[in-house]
Image 1: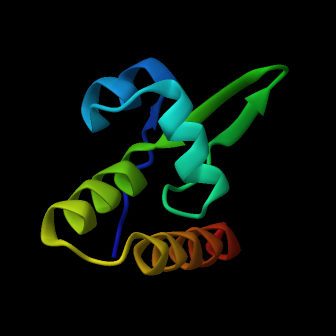
Image 2: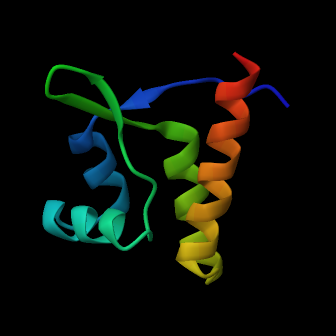
Length: 82
C-alpha cells in the first residue's frame, strides 16, 4: 500500500477535528489522538493520513485508544520501510 505523505500544521488539524487546542493536547496525552511529528526547531506537524484515520475511527465509534495504537503501529512500519 502506497501512502502519500502530507503534513498538516496544527491550525489545519484543529479546523478538521473541531475541538480546541487544549483538547487536542489532552487527547494526545491520553493516547486518543496521534501525536505530532517534529519538523525541526519548535515546528510540528501531523501526518494527514493519520488524521484521516482518526476521523474515520471517531465517526465509526471505534475505541480511540485502539485506533491510535493501530495508527502508531502503521507509522512504525512506514518508518522501517524508509
